[in-house]
Image 1 (cartoon, rainbow, N blue to C red):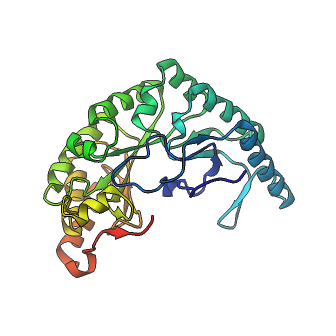
Image 2 (image 1 turned 45 degrees about the vertical axis):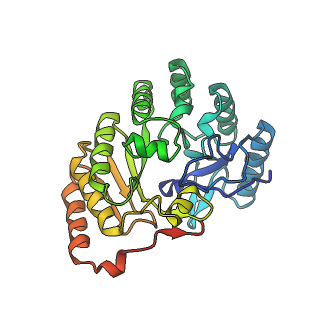
Image 3 (image 1 turned 45 degrees about the horizontal axis):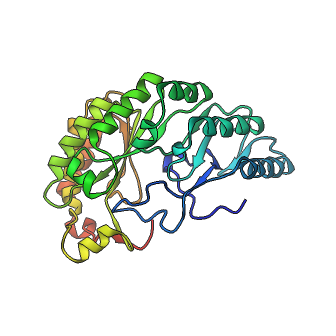
Length: 308
């Protein structure tokens, strides 16, 4: 199998088994994203998926690792967690996902969790029965690009759905027993709207009850509509100080005891990892220190990158 495009995965899935089942993105028009440009969406046929699994297993056995694989020099005895590669593999119909899960279990018999990116409309198109069947098969910890709780910002980003739609679909996941991990962006609303964005996003998250929150900081990439809008003055990025103040307000407004808060992406100025409740004050103290003590020249940036 020759996979087209770059393989992306959430940083916290670094030790998961990466299994390609789709290429590209079904939506692929988000204002800020260039990850899947020029990569048409494609469901990989079962034969290609099985070829990948068979070759991986053969290579592992040759290395004396059985059905395991080597990660950071550690001999992993068994694969327990599988991450389905692609922008939104959850776009596949439930029966197609179940086929690929069943196939993976033949080669990775100890795998119990199958996770992936999922758009709100991917979930919306599945019945409650579909969701329960996927949960029973091991689907869990879906990564959802929530980004913000402000509908006008979601509309500008061309996400394709509202905050209320995301809430409704997250509630459906909860009823099916499927956890979701929400991806949020600091500075999503642009300069001058950080506190507003923090409060609206916290309200959405408090209602949707994610298992984990993963933060990144909005960055404009070459070739995106957002980058073009910045160049012509139609959108202004928040500076790093405002983004840190927004993050502090967001954490202060979140009421999700036990939810993991992960903000250690390379784009984040202050790495934060902790659990809301027991670690909240420590994270707020770290942000206070950064806001008050770090020289602005050390944290302010243009906010543009050529690629992720």
